[in-house]
Length: 211
Image (cartoon, rainbow, N blue to C red; front, side, top):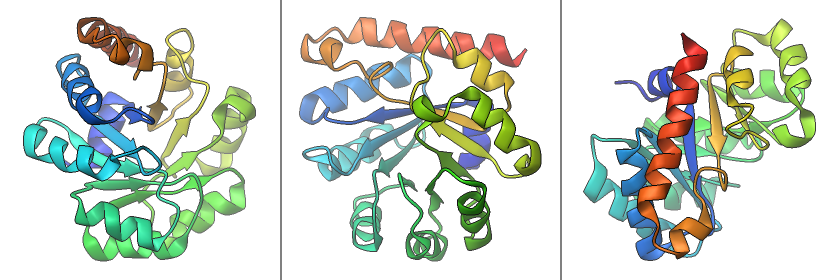
């Protein structure tokens, strides 16, 4: 199935930032058991590319696995070489978007303004990452989607179990979830059953909002 279609159907992109080694491997397993279909590990996480390569070996076909915080072309090449199936950035670098197209890898660049959103779209991005959502707020999302509703938007920052339904109903293509989903404390304490249960709560909340 197409990555963007999977995101639009399931909404959640799990973000592993500062979680590495066995914690990243077991955490990914727990989230996938909990129903998460798309996982990214950020490039500024220690051992990120090792985690990504391990995920591809273990969970190929069970989830889409990619790299986040891809700031430039050099990082993009490193991530793709390690098996990234998609690239997500906090910024818009059109060279990265073009490279993704060449490699057959989706790139979701970080944008904030209408001009950036349209530039990313024209560069070939099939969706954009609207960031930082915690600062911008859901009203900004609604306002910006009014004229730009044809461009799929993945929001990151400020989304939690209490408000995820509001974002889904506001028409997002997806939501990036970091520490609220990939809880470092649960990982460090080895509470992977709780991590899985928390993932199920988010999956259920999305399903309820989409009914």
